[in-house]
Amino acid sequence: MKRKLIIGLLFLGILNANAQSLSIETSLDSNKLIIGDQTLLILKVTVPKGRKEVVFPRYTDTLQKNVEVVQRSKIDTISSDDKVMVLQQKYTITSFDSGSYVLKVGPFIIDGKDSMFANPISLYVNTLKVDTAKDVKDIKAPYTAPIEWAEVWPWLRWLILGLFIIAILVYFLWKFFNKDVDATTAKELEPAHTIAFRELERLKQDDLVQKGSLKEYHSRLSDIVRAYIEQRFAINALELTTDELLDIFRNSEFINAELFGQLKQLLTIADLAKFAKYEPIENENMMSYKYAYEFVTKTITIVENTVIETEQTESKE
Image (cartoon, rainbow, N blue to C red):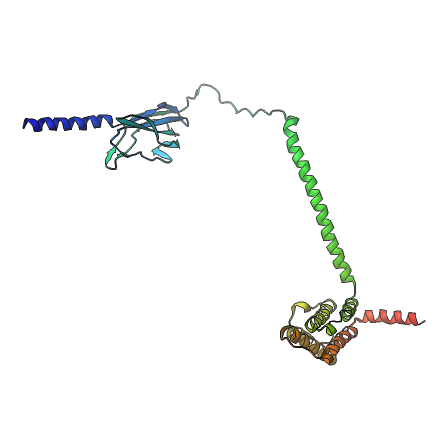
C-alpha cells in the first residue's frame, strides 16, 4: 500500500512538472493607443519536448470586435533545449474605436486534444484631445515646391522621343495608304473594257491551250469576264455563282438573248473545267474566247463608243 502511494505521488509530480513547463503568454508592445495607431501583440507558447504539435489560433482581419489585424508573422521557434521549446508569433493590431478592450487569445490546441487560452490582456484606445477653447482654423494649403529642370528633363526627353516616333509612323502610314489609294484610283479611272481587252490579250499570249492547261485557261477567261462585269455594271460578279450571275442578266436590258446565251455557255464550260475535271474540246476553247471578246465589245458604254468612233473618224481623215 505504501509502495502504491509513492508511485502515485511520483506520477502526479511528473504531471505537475509537465503542466508547469506548458505555458501560454501574451504581451503588448504598448497597451495604450491613440485611435488608428498600431501596436504589437506577442503570443508565446512554452511546451515540453515530449509534446509534438502546437496549433496557434489563426486571426485574419479581426482579432475581436473593434480590434483589427494589420499584419501576422509566421510562427518561429525562439528557443529550444532538452526540456522545453518556445514558439512565438506576432500580430500587428489597431483599433479605430476608443474604449477599453480585454484581449483573450485562443484557443491553442496542444497535440490535437488539449485546448488552452492565453492570459487576458487589456488594451486601451483613446481619442485625440481637442482644445475647444481655441478657435478653429482653416487647413493650410500645401506648400508648392519650385520645379527643378533636373526633374523635368527626363520626362521631356521621353516626350520628344515619343513624338518623333509617332511622326515617323504617321509618315510611313500616310505613304503606304496614299500609295494604295492612288493605285486604286488609277485602276478605277481606267475603263473596264480597256482592262478586259488587255487581260484577254495576255491570256492569248500565254498560249495555255497549247500547253494543255485548259483548267487555268477557262478559269482566267471566266475571271476576266466577271471582273469586267463587276466594274462595268457594278455587280459583285466575282463573288456570285454562275447561276446567281445569270439570273441577274436574264431578261436584262443590258444584253440581248444572243449575248446571254454566249455568256451562259462561257461560264458553264469554265465551271465544268474548274470543278468537274471536264476537258473542253478545241472548238469550245476557241468559242469561249470569242464569246468573252464579243461580250466586252458589245457592252461598252455609249459614251465610250462615241469616243472610239470619233477617234476612228479622226484617224481616217
